[in-house]
Image (cartoon, rainbow, N blue to C red; front, top):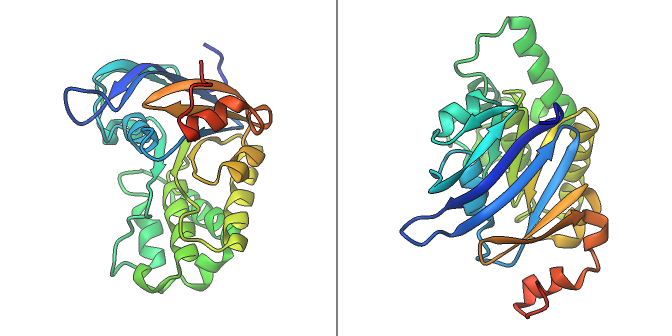
Length: 244
């Protein structure tokens, strides 16, 4: 396998009962690459991220994370392998401040104070407002600030793979642009990123490659720019029979 490939998903099946929500999914993402996963509501995008992060066990298939095959692993094991998920809705902890959230991101990591400080400084460099609001509880932050904190929390682990589920929900356009600018900066530094996003035009403009999910299956993959006007993408959203 190419040394730049961070994650390979092979024949992934996953769901919440006997009938899989996602089936026969094959994906890969490399260092310095943004892979967009797009599809209509109910296509299985969040379920796929749950399977890739270990929150949902695989019914079939396997993952390969930085060359390490994974068949049955929970979220703790995948976190240790360098997979970080920013879930839809942020899921922060009321009562904990911004600083406490960032320190929590270092949990169970044996780092020197210097390295821990460098990681925190990098997060606040990307999102300066988090330094300004460092003593504020998460629940008093704006939606945009909460999204920045959720991403910062994931970045404190210096993940090999960063996954984001609908990061633009509820955010003002200027904040959405800021979040996507940060993701572009991370990609330029070699970060591998998978992003699920309903703002299809926006994410395809920023991603390198895209996978279109329809009824739990990947029906087309390719360069993101080439998929913008692809009728198969429109078919996946409109439920027509153009996808083959």
